Length: 175
Image (cartoon, rainbow, N blue to C red; front, side, top):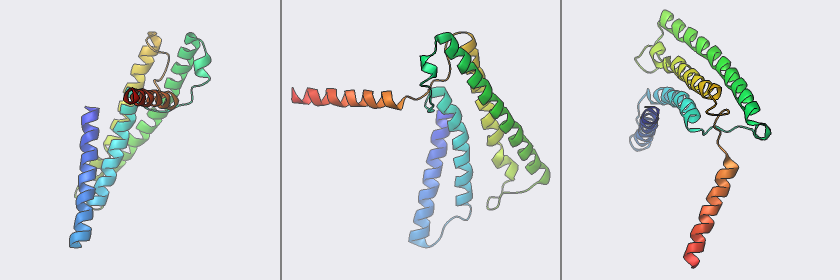
């Protein structure tokens, strides 16, 4: 679901921006609401992408010291990290919910879109709620001993692997 939503949002942003550029430069026209719509869609994609990045382990982090710890201590550090991240996400969720509630109460519409602003802002608390759910799953897996912490992207290892693959392909061509 996350991948489909991200693909849909990125495609919509790309198509709308492309159409806006063509209309502006070819026909000296455009959509008044395009910039605001792409801004909201980008924000939604960022929030969904944040959770997706945790799921697939693509976030970067500095874990050089944690890797030197025993697995038990790695789990302790991993759980502390998850709890701190969950606390931060909970604060942002509460703030986002209060902001959306305020926009609902005030009844403000978006500047260029004929939509109530609170509707356009609903993905913000949803994104942080989804983040909390992801963090809860990681905490569960740490407590059950299935993992020691976050799965982080390892750019150095990715580079070495890519270098080895390229060297293997080059070696096969020469043979």
